[in-house]
Amino acid sequence: MTLVVGITGGIGSGKSAVTKRLEQYDITVVDADVVAREIVEPGKPALTAIADHFGADILQPDGQLDRAKLRARIFSDESERRWLEQLTHPLIGEEIVNQIAASRSPYTVLSSPLLLDTSQKALTDCVVVVDTSEALQIERTVQRDSNDEAQVKRIMAAQLARDERLSLADIVIDNSGSLDELNSQVDELHKEFLLRAEASR
Image (cartoon, rainbow, N blue to C red; front, top):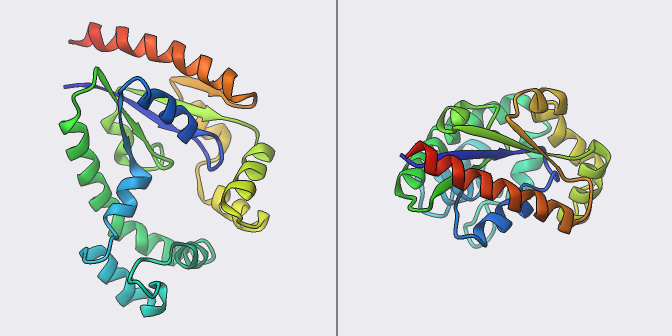
């Protein structure tokens, strides 16, 4: 079984920058966000269930899920968010397990914003938290997603608190500096994970 490194962090913390760097080393990255999009593609049962529950206007004219509209609905109503999670989390979990099993790289990364909130943590051997200040999280997310600040704060409030996330980390990557500074931390971790993977064989 391959060594599985879990990578998580709050919205706008820089998880994607970390995983992109590791992909340059040909490391398999199983991205829970990508899996979450795949399970609600047109024709998939989960999308039909979502449209039945929220109404057909949750779909775009081409039949794709209107993510912005769904995000606004679930982050303004806790019961709707729970309903969606009960539908999608088991499907996401199943696909993540399949993708990890298919990985052939020296170690495998599971990147997930909900790694520590769900049973996904049990799939990992080591938890890496990408961390930055909450002010930077908001600034980066507003710039990246064109979300307003209030929406970003609602998303952050629904995620695990920063202190709690840090307390559950085996390794913390500080992403309050430049991309070069981030990459040099990731490069060192990559070397460490190769050694751990070799030792675990």
